[in-house]
Image (tube, rainbow, N blue to C red; front, side, top):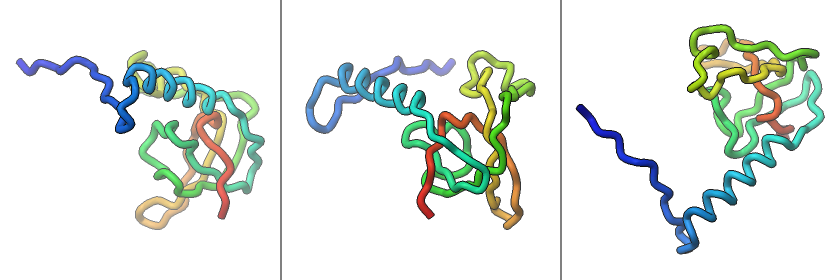
Amino acid sequence: MTQIAPFQIVPAETGGNPAADYADRLRELSKSMDRRHELRPGQFVRWKPGLRNRLRPEYNQPAIVRAILPAPVFDTSELGRDGGSAGFNEPLDLVLGLIVENGDFVEFHYDRRRFEPAET
């Protein structure tokens, strides 16, 4: 049976306190998640740094806002119902349009707290 290594905080290159660095990063990302941006259809957006939880779009790849939902929808698939999943009970209130690998335009639902306006 494979044994899983315990969680370990890797020291920062600055030689600082790894636990304090980790706590600072948690605080920073939590504040970023709570910081709301006014988004509107037709606007280009990108992931906020450190808040990407899906495979697409890539970091810094622009997506176009297609809709802001008045009430969030929730993933009802098996993955969305798994309390150990990053997408568990995530409020999907943003519809984004992307061009995928084959060149087609597709729409996906996201949690808008994770996005910020992008310059194009």
